[in-house]
Length: 78
Image (tube, rainbow, N blue to C red):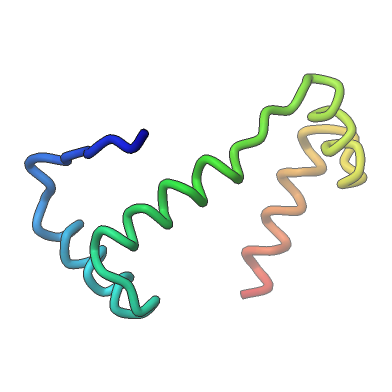
Protein backbone atom coordinates (compact mmCIF):
# COMPACT_ATOMS: atom_id res chain seq x y z
CA UNK A 1 0.00 0.00 0.00
CA UNK A 2 1.49 3.34 -1.00
CA UNK A 3 1.17 6.56 0.97
CA UNK A 4 1.23 10.15 -0.24
CA UNK A 5 3.71 12.41 1.51
CA UNK A 6 3.88 16.19 1.54
CA UNK A 7 6.75 18.50 2.44
CA UNK A 8 5.70 22.00 3.40
CA UNK A 9 7.61 25.28 3.62
CA UNK A 10 10.63 24.15 1.62
CA UNK A 11 13.08 27.06 1.22
CA UNK A 12 13.43 28.43 -2.31
CA UNK A 13 17.15 27.62 -2.52
CA UNK A 14 16.45 23.94 -1.79
CA UNK A 15 13.70 23.80 -4.40
CA UNK A 16 16.08 25.30 -6.96
CA UNK A 17 18.78 22.75 -6.10
CA UNK A 18 16.24 19.93 -6.32
CA UNK A 19 15.02 21.14 -9.72
CA UNK A 20 18.59 21.26 -11.01
CA UNK A 21 19.32 17.80 -9.67
CA UNK A 22 16.11 16.38 -11.17
CA UNK A 23 16.92 17.93 -14.55
CA UNK A 24 20.44 16.51 -14.43
CA UNK A 25 19.02 13.01 -13.81
CA UNK A 26 16.15 13.45 -16.31
CA UNK A 27 13.52 13.04 -13.61
CA UNK A 28 10.51 14.92 -12.31
CA UNK A 29 10.75 16.56 -8.89
CA UNK A 30 8.73 13.71 -7.42
CA UNK A 31 10.94 11.13 -9.15
CA UNK A 32 14.07 12.81 -7.82
CA UNK A 33 12.68 12.92 -4.28
CA UNK A 34 11.82 9.21 -4.48
CA UNK A 35 15.33 8.40 -5.72
CA UNK A 36 16.88 10.42 -2.87
CA UNK A 37 14.72 8.65 -0.29
CA UNK A 38 15.49 5.20 -1.72
CA UNK A 39 19.23 5.90 -1.90
CA UNK A 40 19.28 7.22 1.65
CA UNK A 41 17.49 4.21 3.08
CA UNK A 42 19.50 1.66 1.11
CA UNK A 43 22.86 3.12 2.06
CA UNK A 44 22.06 3.36 5.75
CA UNK A 45 24.43 1.08 7.59
CA UNK A 46 24.92 0.67 11.29
CA UNK A 47 28.35 -0.40 12.46
CA UNK A 48 29.04 -2.17 15.67
CA UNK A 49 31.80 -0.68 17.84
CA UNK A 50 34.06 -3.56 16.79
CA UNK A 51 33.45 -2.84 13.08
CA UNK A 52 34.18 0.87 13.66
CA UNK A 53 37.43 0.01 15.44
CA UNK A 54 38.46 -2.29 12.59
CA UNK A 55 37.84 0.49 10.03
CA UNK A 56 39.92 2.92 12.09
CA UNK A 57 42.74 0.39 12.40
CA UNK A 58 42.73 -0.12 8.62
CA UNK A 59 43.77 3.52 8.19
CA UNK A 60 47.02 2.73 9.96
CA UNK A 61 46.60 5.53 12.50
CA UNK A 62 47.62 4.78 16.05
CA UNK A 63 47.25 8.10 17.87
CA UNK A 64 45.15 11.28 17.50
CA UNK A 65 48.37 13.20 16.79
CA UNK A 66 48.94 11.07 13.69
CA UNK A 67 45.52 11.97 12.29
CA UNK A 68 46.21 15.66 12.93
CA UNK A 69 49.49 15.41 11.06
CA UNK A 70 47.80 13.59 8.18
CA UNK A 71 45.19 16.35 7.87
CA UNK A 72 47.90 19.04 7.90
CA UNK A 73 49.81 17.24 5.15
CA UNK A 74 46.69 16.91 3.01
CA UNK A 75 45.85 20.60 3.45
CA UNK A 76 49.36 21.76 2.59
CA UNK A 77 49.35 19.61 -0.52
CA UNK A 78 46.46 21.50 -2.12
